[in-house]
Image (cartoon, rainbow, N blue to C red; front, side):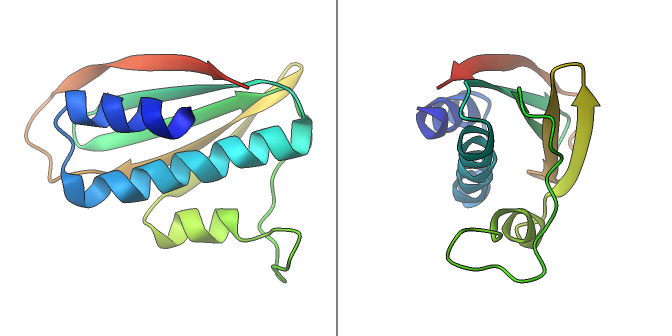
Length: 123
């Protein structure tokens, strides 16, 4: 569901096709991590600031994500993958959970365009 929401939102906001696959993959990694590590619903929020996209996934887990130095069959690939796709990761602890942000550039900046965010609960 998160992938479909993201693809439709990106298309509606004119995101270049060359970046859509990367963004959908990043969303998939963040949502999968939230569901896998918290077993609770999470919330996906996409916000466009000019050419920069902020992907935010909020969950109820209080454990902060850390990149694994030895990825294996149980995971540990997500955060390095996101960074390899050009995403900058920031985790914001909150009361009763956290929000993990991945920010990346979609296109060269073309001015102060700001698209309305979309928020979707994901289970």
